[in-house]
Image (cartoon, rainbow, N blue to C red; front, top):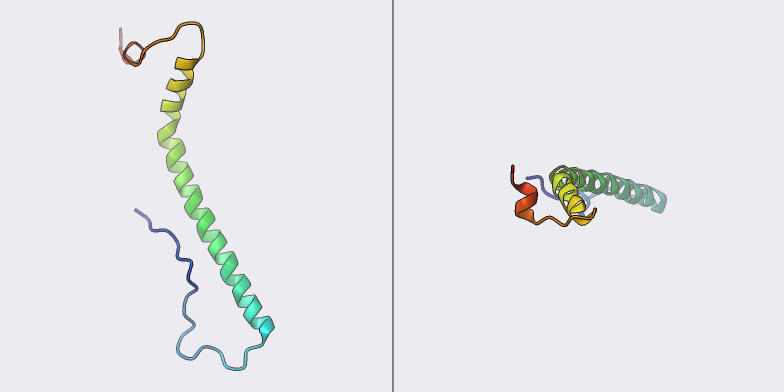
Length: 81
């Protein structure tokens, strides 16, 4: 099972950058935000794919039970006879 992406930015190493300007800090912050957005969107799409895969047939059964004139029970709907 895949783990969720971390919200913490990765450490820059020992001491970080010396003499970095505010513009460079904003660019790195923006880069981290973009990377996190991509990770979360990938994670969300993977979960949505699994939910759609396993939920499609039950959805069709429920919609079929609630539409039309005849109301069938689960046993009548799923029995081969």
